[in-house]
Image 1 (cartoon, rainbow, N blue to C red):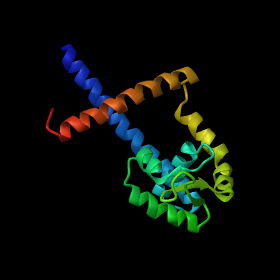
Image 2 (tube, helix red, strand yellow; image 1 turned 90 degrees about the vertical axis):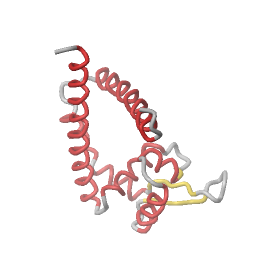
Image 3 (cartoon, helix red, strand yellow; image 1 turned 45 degrees about the vertical axis):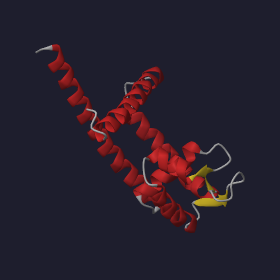
Length: 160
């Protein structure tokens, strides 16, 4: 098999592995969301806010960018999460036109209840990989994600 064909095969295998991983992660997110009585997108919004918040709250735009979804959807869903007291929304101290969102104590407590199960799940998913291997894998995935965005942009404007 020629080198180009081998690379094409390896890329196809990689893409199918990512599709499989995505599908499994979606099921896992649905399960976590169901435990909390929310939807999978709402769970992902909570996780994004948790990941992005450095103590000042997080803008809807930042959440939308992290999840690659429309900001209006974030606004709609975060209002629902606020109603069930999982989020607090407050005007940004820098610009009152924008809202900063933070997880409430209720949300943090509910997520904490899941932490032992989440740690066990992570151990199962990354069995056989040490911290250095996971770090290396993450670096490669960041590069592939960046290159994928570039390829997608090129395809959408007809450059490829």
